[in-house]
Image 1 (tube, rainbow, N blue to C red):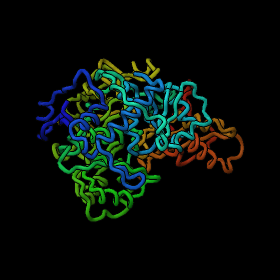
Image 2 (spheres, rainbow, N blue to C red):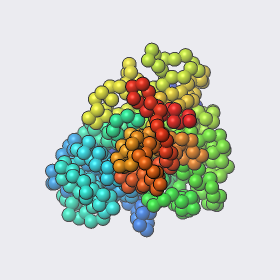
Image 3 (cartoon, one colour):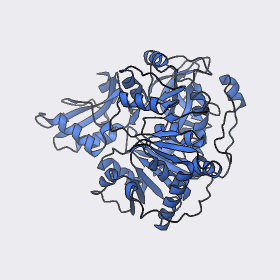
Image 4 (tube, rainbow, N blue to C red):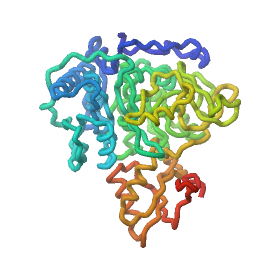
Length: 521
């Protein structure tokens, strides 16, 4: 296999690129071979990752291959086999990629977990997935001490992992359709869902990355995102595609995003291509852009940016901000790219080459301009299934189309405008947050009778997680207790920004909470 192969040879008119595009995915494919070993075989000293987590540590593709081979050998000796789930629990650093590679070389399924997840969030995901091993740093592994996880046989501390590094074993040959990674996503009803993806899903991200980064890769490109690599945005919108294309990937874990540090990083490392979620852009806007930026392309997604923020980006960053659209089940299916489209601010753009997107309802396609559900098909980034949830998997499909759960309308030019969601997922600071976990956590407090969680408009976050609570008795000090409870047990990014105490919650005749009424109150 030729490493770094483009799916789109050269940028052209959008319609021309779509007409000429054909997927070319080998029957046998392994992501670890594609993003690491193929480069290590041909250009071993090529820079893969520039890790700024503790000083400046440069990882070549040869180093990535050798370390992941040894970790795979150690895991194999410990009994990890093809199909097993291997969890990865640490913030953005080179060892995250090493762990993914090692799992995939064994034919196992890598399971990224957010480093700030609390005990309850980790307990559910590790139990539901049946993970047999977790690879993380000391802080992450310490959160597991109080959990009873009978399937979890191995805990590997990356800062002291010599005992787990073993003799390399032959890489397991995998089909492109074999499971490779599982990412948990939140919904509005029930528990979080494990979205199982095949090795081919890397290919599904490439056309959008190539076009949204305006002809990625270019000579001297350097890539960076502040988005955590535990999420599909940070991992698959940038990190793994950058490695596929042989573009140096900057890794830096911020305890808290600071615009000054982010500006300094981009200048010092000569970052040319950045995936900047909307919240990062809004925080960067609060301080002046420095001299010396090398940016040539910026991609963003997760929530609509609006004309004002897009205009600021052109002026301050010196390049347009290209918006992208997708979800964990089928990522990067649409893009609005200034270099190859006439971009209409406030729209999602157009389907990327190789992907079909249509506006449909229960009866089929809707009339042009009418609102319907955004549906897609044809992308290799489409998930295999939800883990342990066959009914929800079946509900995700209708007549061969993947249902996104988002509502939109299409214009005569094929440009799609996002209208709203037909569920209650909260989009806050680029994260998709389901209310159920938060509600369950809050109602576990002895002074809480009922709780409903919704997203309310927020100028910086897009939506702010807001909890409506029916309490038993006095509420003095209860707000801080509930916020701290969610922060500690689930994750800081899921903690409510506001708690509102009410006498009752709006309910349907069947006893379901009417979250829409709370959002419109």
